Amino acid sequence: MLVDPAQEKKRHRRVLAVQNVKGGVGKTTVAVNLASLLVERYSKKVLLIDADPQCNASLYLLSDEQFLAATDNDSEATKEHGNLWDLFHKDVKYIDLVTGLRHGPRTSFRRYYRVVTRGTGGGSLSLVCGSARLSDIQEMGPELVVSRIRDWLRSASSGEAEVVIIDCPPSTGSLTLSALKAADDILVPMSPDAFALHGLPLLLQKLDQYRTPLRIKCRVAGVLFTLYPPPGTSARSAADAYAKRIEEACRDRRPSVPVLAARVSRDDAYPRSFEQRKPLPFSSDPTLKPLIDELDRVAKDMKLVGDAI
Image (cartoon, rainbow, N blue to C red; front, top):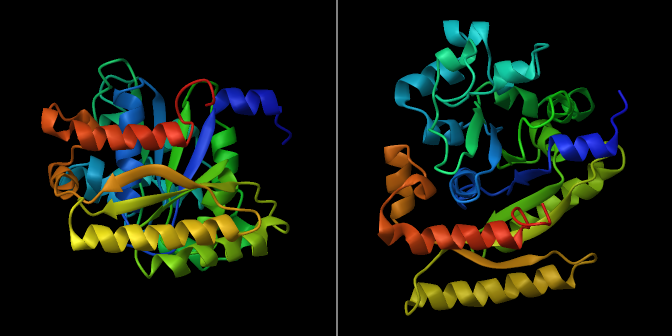
């Protein structure tokens, strides 16, 4: 199906994949809180796709009961409506895969699950739930599944989402390639340590390998340093040293890889927000403002807000 580029841009102004082949770098934390920031501070309509078989983005936004029902493909709820796993196995409509908001239109799926309320300015966050069975997709031939997420997004009606954020698996299998084919840009969260120097080349190598045969057009739009230690500590000095080495390595690549000026700090507020199932931008705690402002800097560095979007 041919899609008018102007219509494609109107439907989804930006599709961002958040990906690193190394786990434990704050990938899901960044994806969920960045999506929430766009909703709460900028009144965006945001669609968050949980493409990680660990389903942590879904767990971040749903109660335990909702999470178990939404991610279990043998439950009555998913038999009728589905999660991301069904996208690769069933011919489903856009609205059936989206976990909506309690103020949103009433659909069968929205009678089962509620994620978060709308932002105070009218923005909305919708979630496509993950499934542990998504790990099966990683082992399939990429040519069989690579276009599924992209084609599903193209089927959405105009205005369904202004920004789409995909929380990718920490690997380079077929599910990851499907997410990358759907994306315009890749954001790579990276902890400034010795391991980080090895993760980015693996991702870039995989992109180079499949870019032409699978027609993957996305680019690495930014490396984001996460879990950044507080100033005045020995851990901060070590992080600064590794960050400098990583920046030099990214600058020396051809083409070079952008490194964002923004940083996301290591802070206990993030695991607490996960336990409370409440992303930081939706909190009224004034002490969290510096952390939320960091996320705001990420959004601006990635040109997710303003005229550039």
